[in-house]
Amino acid sequence: MKARSTQRLALARSLPKESVMKTTSSKRYASRLAAGLLVSSLLSSSANAAVAVQIPSHVTVGTQSFDATTAGLRAYLESIQTTRPLLYSQLAPDVERLETRRTTAVLLAAGGAGIGLATVIYGLATRKTCSEPTLDDPLFEAKTNAWANCNDGNMKRSMGYGLGGLGVLVTGLIAAAVVYPGRDDILGVVNRHNALDPQPMQLQLGFDPQSDFAYAGARMAF
Image (cartoon, rainbow, N blue to C red; front, side, top):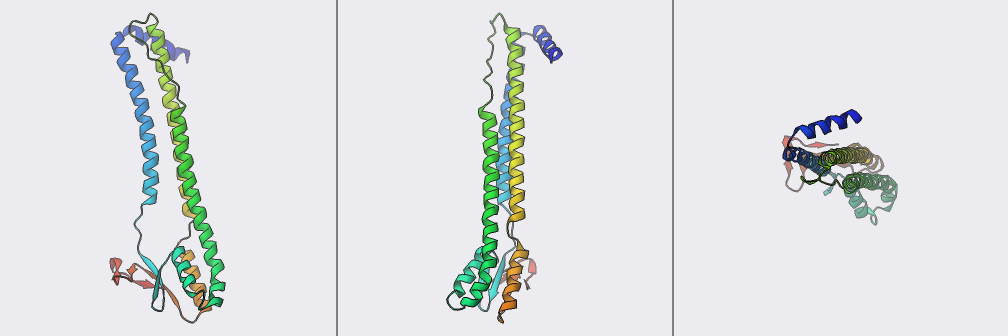
């Protein structure tokens, strides 16, 4: 560290004061740019995780059609609660478990995004204030060296907290994806329904019953 400071001091002495000021200003700009890029990356990762192309899927029972999601299964249960209370009571616990997992996944994703962003903001907000020396300062060389070290420290701090925040975000999103109910979970409820009721429930993939349009020319039912 001492050798590094000596090298910087020697460089400051060998260059005009204007050149030293430009160099340190460039470092300060690079620090701010790196911090901005980290925040942008964090927000972009969060936005990209929320956007996904999904093949439409539905569950159908007779002439009724519902989204092949936890919300769709809940809507189906509500439609039979009064007319078929026994089947409702048999399927309700399974759907409730999926709803609990969905809520947990949303909390994990939101928590990861919130904590990750808060970590980045904390790293930016707690940076040191680096005092820029004036050209006519008799201690210009020493203060320029201290200013450069201060900017370097701020950049490392921003990078550290930024990467830490990004890691928290990614971890939260991965955990949410693992917990969130998937197609296999929906199919499990469909299979249980069909084992309990003579009127089959079908899971249709790549098909929109509203427009009778098969995406990518595929229509599958289970």
